[in-house]
Image (cartoon, rainbow, N blue to C red; front, side):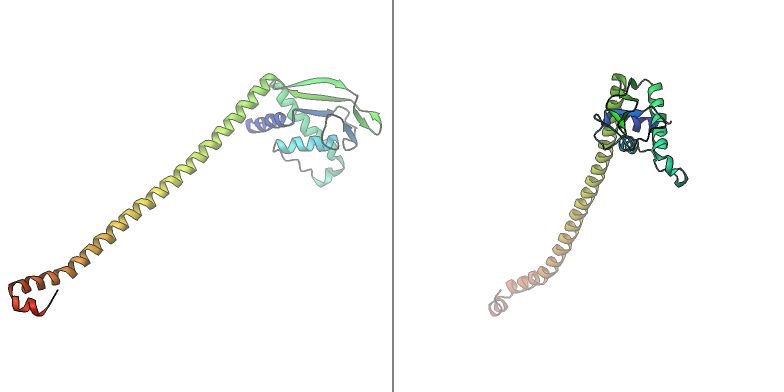
Length: 194
């Protein structure tokens, strides 16, 4: 298993708390229920665990009749990898509470170790920090875009104000000349009142 799969598996263990696996390969885990499992049966429990690990659980059609066995095998592979890293621990084998057509079925409950819990929390913290970093980058990009638009608005406002001022000066110049002419010739000034 690669690092990403181990990380996802460990985080799935953190979500589920423990995983119950039937030790009898002949057991039909679709018919097995357990008081410690919130799902309807062990098959759903293991399938949900595998979905949380983000590992493909699609079973080829030619193996459809062995789907329970395939799900159990994939789960055991994950458990073996995590157990070899001492991130999870194997509980005692038990038969009580796990039933296949009223007959007790042996099972093992695997749970996360303190070092596994610490690793899972650090991984989760790392993922959260990565998400915050990406969100911060997005916010910075948005802030820069808003600043550029604000700066563009200031430049456009300055340009239009300058143009308006030039046009006002063009309108005022003839009036200024007319006023100067009027002030020199008082007869004209009396005739045209400004």
